[in-house]
Length: 137
Image 1 (cartoon, rainbow, N blue to C red):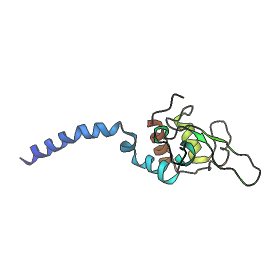
Image 2: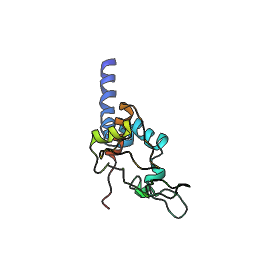
Image 3: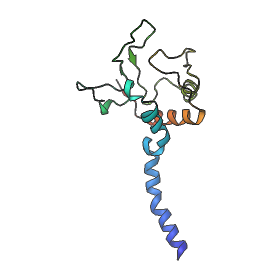
């Protein structure tokens, strides 16, 4: 009796597990947490409306940087799209997040921080971002 209840319970959860596999936030809560809660990537990489609120339909699709430094320095005027990580291989993105050095051999221009994630966290971030649907702009 117990065994059949356990089998039925496991069988009932299989469709839920399969559905979660395709949802980037459900399949990778660590990556989502690091992107949204720690890295605060949307602050620069998501466009804002007239009220300054993030435009959810353009989440992480790239946006103009709305603030400038008070002293002269190299500065990015535009944050690129990171949903889907277009143009980045998995390994190049992991290297960027663990060393701060991009695939072109240079660090990102400020205000992009030179992150030093550990490998596991960098892999989680990359998996989460790669799972997001890239824009076709």
